[in-house]
Each structure stands twice: as C-alpha cells, then as structure tokens.
Length: 317
Image (cartoon, rainbow, N blue to C red; front, side, top):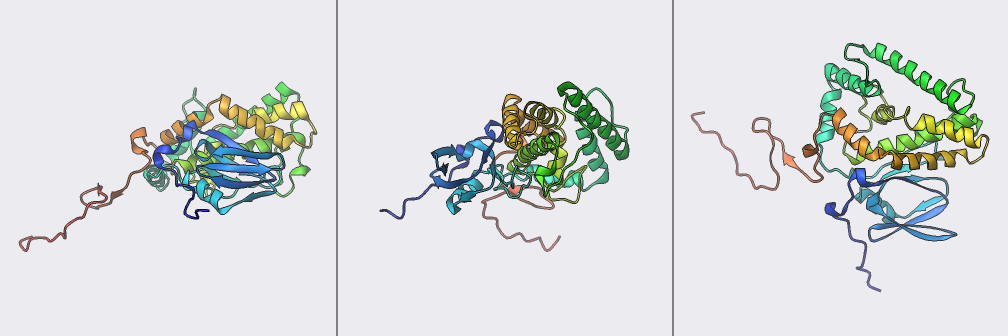
C-alpha cells in the first residue's frame, strides 16, 4: 500500500459557481468520508458519492459521523456545513468561502459602519419586498411596522388558502415537538431558508454577522437576507405541508424536502447571488474567485507577488 497516495486538493477552476450548485443536502444516521473530490455517505443501505463542489449547504442531522478528511474537503470547496439538532432546529458551522475575494466583505463593512449608508441598504432590502411602493422616505420604525403588517397578511392569506388554522407564531428552540403542526412546518421551512442564505453569504465571501436590520448576533445578516424570501418560499410551503400532512410525526423532514424542491424549481440560488451583489453594491467584475492585492494609503491597490525596492525620499524633499 502506497501511503503517499491521497486525495488531491481541488483547484479553483474545478469548483462550481455558487449559483450552479445543488441547494442543500440533508443527512442523518450516516458516516461521511472522502474519496478524492467526493463525499462518501454510508449507512446500512450502502454508499453514495456526492461531488463536493456541487453542493451548496450540507445539513447534518442526528447520528452523523464525519471524518477529518471529509471536513477537509468540505472546507476546501466552500461547502457550508450546518449541524442541526432533531428536526433541524440548530445551525452551527461553515467551511471557507468559495469566493476568495474580500470585495463583498469590504463593501458590506463600509456600508454597515455608516448610519446613512446602513439605512439606505435597509431601505433597499425593504424595497425588494414592496416593489410597487416607494419606501425611500420611510424611517426604520415605519419600515418595521410596514413589514410586520405585510407578514401578518401573508400568514392570514395562506391560512385562508389552505384551511390551516392560524393564531400566532410560536417557536421553542429547545422542544420542537411542543409546536402545532403549522408552527413545526414553519420552523423547518425557515431553518432550510436560513441554511441556504447562510451558505450563499459565506460562499460569496460576505459576513453572516454584519446585519443592516438585525444586529448583535453572529447570523444577523442571514436573518436580513432570508427575510427577503420568506413570503414567497418558506411561509406558503409550510402551510401547504401542514394542510397535507397535519399531525404527521415526520412533518419537519417533509417540509425540508418541499423546500429543497422549491429552491431548485424557483432557481433561488441564482436570485440570491444576484440579490446579494446588488444589496452590497458590488458588480460581477468585483467578485473574482482568486484575487489579492497590497494596500497602500497613497498609491491605492498594488500588485501582489512583486519584489518591491526600498523607498527613500530625496533629501530635498
């Protein structure tokens, strides 16, 4: 046996773009290993090969055993890992960003650090939810009230459409089973949306913690971003699943599968990548996979990999 043989680290040119990837894959009660550029998923039924560069976010449920080699590949290909508890009510870690450019992160930090630009970005995100109205003159308080009214209306509409009774949103992160069927479905649906949002944000090189509306949490921007799509994806799907399956003990799993299909059918990854760049005001040209420069306070960005000569000012100034 040749001990020098091992899995090669994938090159950037071999990695799939974020928008071309499968949205997410949920795994439980299985062992994850690695063979070259693929994740091996094994359980009592056999083994399947998952191309590492083609999955956006990996949801790992109870009973999952992951090898160091598998985690190495996950980090290399920029796949987000979400360790989830029973029925998917927790999320934890992620791999290295697929996009090695810091352009999005720098733009995000600049925008969120100034009150005027932060409010402007928040308005832009609210405007995406009210395409036929002008919200440019509304305060943050007015925007929150308007959004709250919109979401309550979405809940009422879906309740009437599906005949699923609705009173209020109830969520106990420590006991998923205490919830009503619709609240269980909403929890699972929102969690899937958070996972995909989290994956796109970190894969593109932005910060999950620098939120414009939400703040103070390491996933603040995830909540900001996911809120753009709840009325179209997670809320209607949760009501549809609750109407179809009611008190089914596996309602969380059925909701996640429905969300996965909706993500693919609605080409949500493509939209998310485009929306993220628009929100953070960065063009396609500013998000190349592998770019690095040297910063200079007077000359601007300078080339990396160049052996510079010592600079000395003339004695005459």
